[in-house]
Amino acid sequence: MSPDITIIVPAFNAEKYLSRCLDSIAGQSLSSWELIIVDDGSIDATTDIAKEYAGKDSRIKVINASGKGVSAARNTGMELAGGKYLAFVDADDYLEPDYLKELFDRAEKSNADITQCSFSFIDEAGNKTPDANSVDRIYEDKDAILRAYFAGTHGDIRDSVWAKLFKRETFADVRFNTGLSIYEDGYYVYQCCQKAGKVISFGVPLYNYVQHGGSTTHSRVNEQYKDFFSMFEKQKKDLAVNSYFRKRISGREAETSLWLMRILVNNGNKDAFWDLRKRAVKVSGDVIWSSAPFTIKLKLIGVTVMPHIYLAMLKGRKS
Image 1 (cartoon, rainbow, N blue to C red):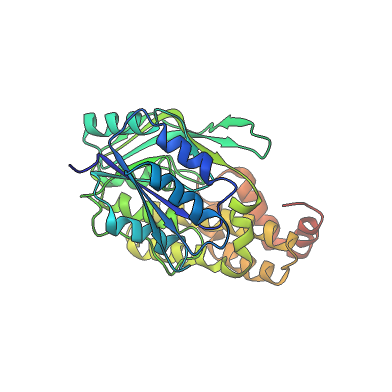
Image 2: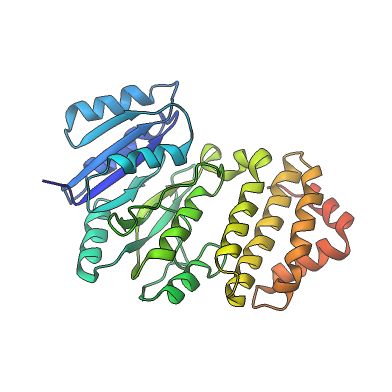
């Protein structure tokens, strides 16, 4: 009998966090699941920990990958999945006991293609802060779903694959883009939103997103930051005829450029500032005359009119 949910956990050198993650999955109140751990070429004790759990629970499988990255690891798990729904969990995060049950019950009741719950930020000291931007809503047509995806910086339909269930049949031909080194999950969710007929979101924080140096994008942006803009170009090409979406994507380009400027300058990569400035200036017309936050507009004006002063200010700030 096929499980209700296939959980996919890509793991790379995750020995510090993996046991907590797997304990939270093993302790779920819904029992009809399978777990596929894709070990992405770890050189620490990750493999041993994963195999130990698999040896105690027949629902758990361990797949050894060859270090091709998180997108390829998730795709590998998807090829082997047998569940009606897919759930993605990062190896350093963990779940509340009713995470799967709450998502599954709502997905089944509403026949949703994507079901999303809220989450909590967990800092390095273990402090828990529920996300303040969660929404309780149902989206039932493509325009409403895409508008929710592009709402704000991260969307009312969040641009992360965790804290969601995906109906596997609906997205059978959707895969993670292995050519993206950053924000690959955001593009996967975007592709799913293009195909979804119904998305539901509820504001109960059931997923715990752990924030630490090794889990942030900061460590990957120095060489791969252009992947963000590759994704934006793909989205603009898809939605070229719709001025609303073009402006929303331009807003994200501007916010991402400003965010990356701060990180990269403080990482010592000042040359990237001028490339990012060009990108910000290019979309500034769309953003200035949009409903983007005033602070974003003000920063865009500053980086456009007084770039050297803006750069000097960034050098004095911490990322």
